[in-house]
Length: 110
Image (tube, rainbow, N blue to C red):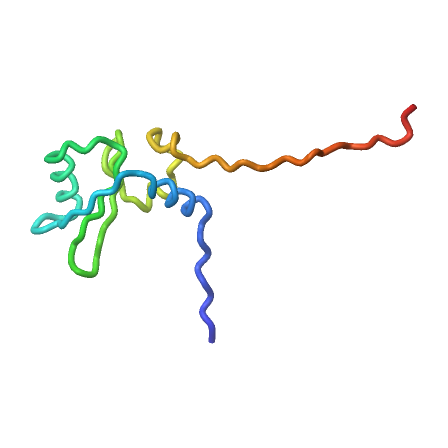
C-alpha cells in the first residue's frame, strides 16, 4: 500500500527560502551540547545577527539554529514564524503578479 505524503506548509517553505539568504556557519559541537557550542562560537567569532548556525552533533545528526537580535532560536521555529523576526522582514521575497488590463463593460447606459 502506498504511503501518503506529508503535506508541506507554504509558510514553512517560504521561511526556508528566506533563511537560505542568511549567512550560514557550520561548526562541530565537540564535547559541548549543540546550543552551548553555538553560543560559544557566536561569542568567540563576534557574529552579528541574522545568521544560521549548523551544528554537527555526530556523523548522522545536525542541529540548525538562527541567531537573531532577540537571541538564539531553533531554525524550524524561525521557518514557521519568520514574520516575527524584524531582521528577516527585509529579506521576504515579494511576489509580483502581472495585472492584465481588466476592463469592465457596462451595458445599457446611455
